[in-house]
Length: 116
Image (cartoon, rainbow, N blue to C red; front, side):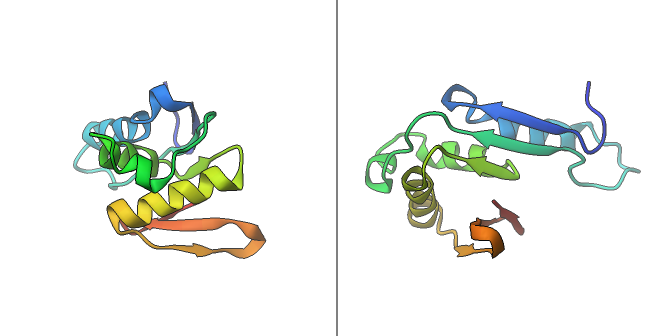
């Protein structure tokens, strides 16, 4: 059971597609008279190293995995190197852009929103 503005934390590689699945389920459950859009916040944290974009682009479902992660509002990694690999994969595979933000954060533009 969820309430508006709840935060859902998703942890680790075996749930990489869950942010997109939750996003799609929430949109499908909305009534036509309701304002469209998400009412929950999602955080995805990967507890293992994220591979380089060269390795990641060889994965059969690499694009789908990236898109699953990018449906979260915040994506976290254990080290900057892993975050850098994710940013490079997002840029090289999906053609996304990213920018430095105040406070040392990095934002990736995906479908009109900024993912931290």
